[in-house]
Image (cartoon, rainbow, N blue to C red; front, top):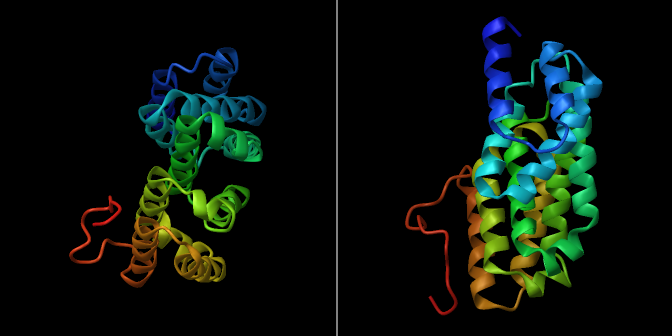
Length: 221
């Protein structure tokens, strides 16, 4: 990273106004993004800030992480991101039942972070991408899905479907099979319509097919 890139990354990270690990953030900046230990702490704090702070925090946080992909500290940042994301996923039942807004923020963060850092040092993060689909599209969760959750899955494949096909073709093929099975198994008509759109995305190069520009599909439509 040159001086310009270092300055831009520092500005974006500070602009997040993360309340925790401020000292570690300044330590990371002072090291010119070489300190993996500080980066790991910052990665943990970024995940918490993004998930508990709402949609805007999520977008800004993942973009800031993307600026550090080529930095010496990135392996540490990636470890911190994964450790924190994994902790939230371990609490998925509680998040989904008691903190639904945070659960939706988590779903958005998982796809957004992959979109911004790709598969570089993030093999463990991409595992969680697939685990999220596996969790939501199988019984018993499949029959209790909410519209917002399927919206997140649709938005996720629109954003990262091509990247997953490039980086993990075999696993994406398995995901397509899972989506097909979910389409067959789900009972709610509105959910079947939305899962059908997931199938169509895979057949149309991860773009909304003609006539399907509206993602929200309501019951009885």
